[in-house]
Length: 161
Image (cartoon, rainbow, N blue to C red; front, side, top):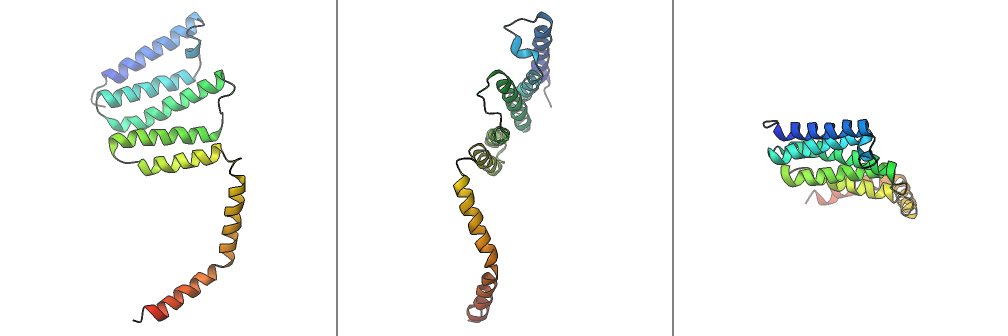
C-alpha cells in the first residue's frame, strides 16, 4: 500500500466508533457493538484504500469483508434475511464482478459464482431440473462407448481422405 492515509484513517475512525459504542451502550450505535462491525470496518478500509490510492487489487478482499460483515449483521437483525450458503457465493460473485471492472480480470469467476449462488439459493425450485440432468448423465454414462465407436469410425473413414 503506497498511501496508507485512507486505510489508516478509516480503520481508526471505525475502531473508535466500535469501542465507543461498546462503552456507551447507546441504542443508536447498537449496530456497531458486535463482531460483524469489525468485518465491515476493515472491508470499508480496504475499499477506501483501493479507490483513493488506485490500488484496485484491494477491492476484492474489501468487498468480501464488507459483504460478509453486512450479511452477518443483517442475518442477526432481520429474521427474514436469507441465512444460506448461497448468499456467500453471491457476495463472492459481486466482489469478482466489481474488481473485474477495475483490474480487467475475474469476470468469468463472477459469472460462475453468480450461477452457483443462484442454483444454491433457489435449489428447491430447480429440483425437477436436477432430476432431468441426473437422468441424462446416467444415460450418457451408460452409452459412452458409442462415443469411442463414432470417433473410431470418423478416424477410419474421414481422416483417410
